[in-house]
Length: 459
Image (cartoon, helix red, strand yellow):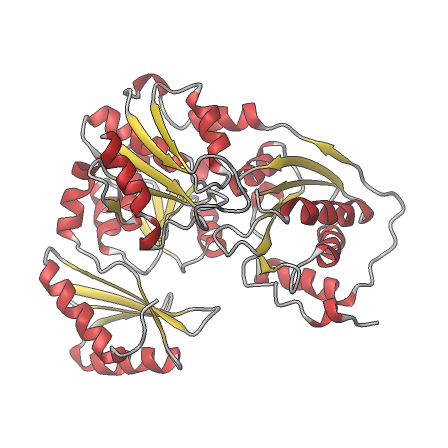
């Protein structure tokens, strides 16, 4: 019999599960997700982790009951970041893993990120829709033997894996501001601190699901000031901030300036190509010229993929790419089962700062001058698709190169842009870059905003 939980399963998104608790995600739905996941995957050994949100423990408990009633053994790694579920899944050779988290969503939201063996993502096209159908039907197969739930400690192996990405003995005693946003990153920093000759200045460090200092989302400009100020106040060499489940990390140079994720992609690509000459590097279509230039200069092969972790990971496996990066601060590594990590990137940046003796500002200064960018501009529109088509028609007679990998990308000799509609809200996202001409970049950005309709509110 259909009930209210069956009718509203809006918490199922394209790549994961996210919803307001208890309206669209609650313990009953979490239990069913566990049953459906076990049945779909025919799994026997599943990792479960959770973030520090106030509802994460109860949801993880309900999820685990569903998994066990579905015949799966649950290996509980407790409070962690999403990448620790990925790590436990591939390192311990589990059949799959589920992270209970809503990352940077509001405090009354929660969600889940699902993977299968080798930490391969489960998204709409690869099983999430099937799981949703089973949750809706709520008619699960009988199971002869229920599973068990046991704790799993991965801290030692996980920290060793992270430190294996750099030569710890080469790291200089740098002064580093870390802002965990009262999320899950602080505990990992504390564990790394014991092994690194680095001085950490910790702000918003203690995990707190009440988020007393606001939701950790450094992608929002208004959330960056506190990290920037701490860098300046402490005369630190670098600042690092994370979102709640630390699958993204954001960098600030020694002047407290925010470093666009786009330039970090190019920097990390060059680092990985020095280790793996001729390797393939995956990048997203929103901003491309700097990455392509740096990859080719370093002897690598740039490969463009549609935006989104499921697409990037799938393309990385297909190409056996050594690294993949998105301007939104997601960084993927072949040596991390092609998954994204919010810890490996800053360790690599400290490594290159130590080896070159250059501050972060100097490592990216030339690139920001060569390829100035607008930063992503989000505009709320009544009809986003109509606006994108209007832009396409306007520039079509100018004989640009056009690409539809993700939204609309149009390239001209000295500048380019990408504009795309959001999958989840009536918003268009605009990115503009130019070749060595910041004035041109700004002029074209304003031109595009006018064409879209500059009276619309920017988000």
